[in-house]
Image (cartoon, rainbow, N blue to C red; front, side, top):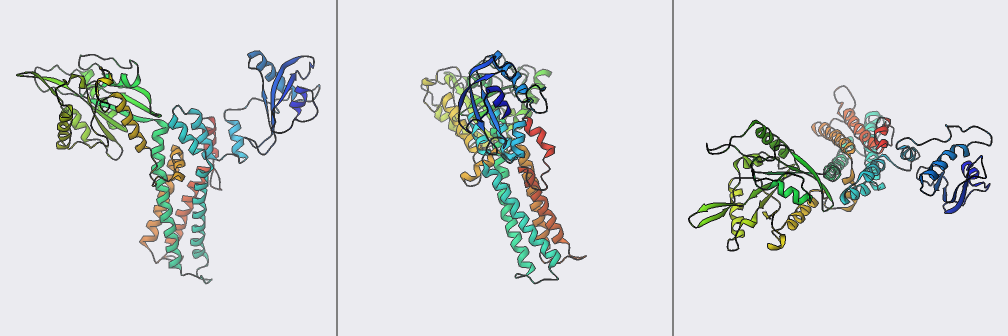
Length: 497
């Protein structure tokens, strides 16, 4: 409290957790007022953000006032007529307050990482998963799993050390079967957490969306409408987009990274334009980017084909686009089909019939199914000119529903599992290592169910116990607690965020 006494010229400490207004003076030049109306709050340890005594000074925000108060604090921390000691008062290092909170058991490592995600959140969904990840329930679940593994390991090691010397209430076989049942149940919970963490990663890093289609299908126009700005050049000339154009967009609170790709085509007849080397490279990159995306939006456009009566609308799936879609990984990727340029369809022409025919064409070509109905829109006409289901607004709303399904918890929608959506990549990798160790245990026990003794021929129980130790160590590293945590190697990186 030396800083408070020397800045405020008062001997008595302020009342804890009560805001007070004080005049701040220079510690040596007591006639000099630094701030005539500063707001002060004192929080005594251990119930503070860091677990230590905290004194907050809320001063007027002018640069000169702030600078004068900051320069006076080191002097106020020193005794009268002595030089300021930089070891007593100094500027905090990056993340130091959070580091102190961790060491004083005010935060665990999962909450520290969630705090970093909260500070960097740009969308509503990113903020929500950061809040879910900051709850104490996440770390408590991991710690509960670790305690279960320690107990199960203790039962196995009792078999190893005392099975020949002492009598157990249950036979060794029944004990191992009981442990196996616990481990199998625990592994299913860990794997559910891993799946939820992968879903949460989409929210944290953003959902990768690729706009795939033939040249002049309107991909760039669609990107511009979604981004509400001229992000990509739009031209009637084929091959305008050569490289991937990346744009970050907030769709219904979900951060999405849209990629406008080069149009896919190949020369079929001599009358078609040659495909230059630059366009070929653009097509190659477009295919690679599409196959790495979380969501592929296949854009098809309405074209007017000549007929005896003038022209008729036609919608076709480009062969190159179809070939690329067939190679996507349906376990990791979702495909959405969109018809663009519906403003070219006349008032007496049936869009619904054309959608049905295109849907059959998609099925006949064995292209990936879509969780959404075939969407239709126009990037040039006003949405009110068409029905509500064929508009850009409906397209965005449909994507929002899709993203909600992609990022929903997989464990029967239990609210208690929503915190696992906030698991970071570090936590997910450790959970995967934990699951691998649990699977190793199950493989060892199931393959030799009657090996219960610790001798030269039957060592499976020893190896099984080691697998449980390894799994428990992974959980300790997640929360930063336990003998095996070894958190120093990750603390620097985590706290600097």
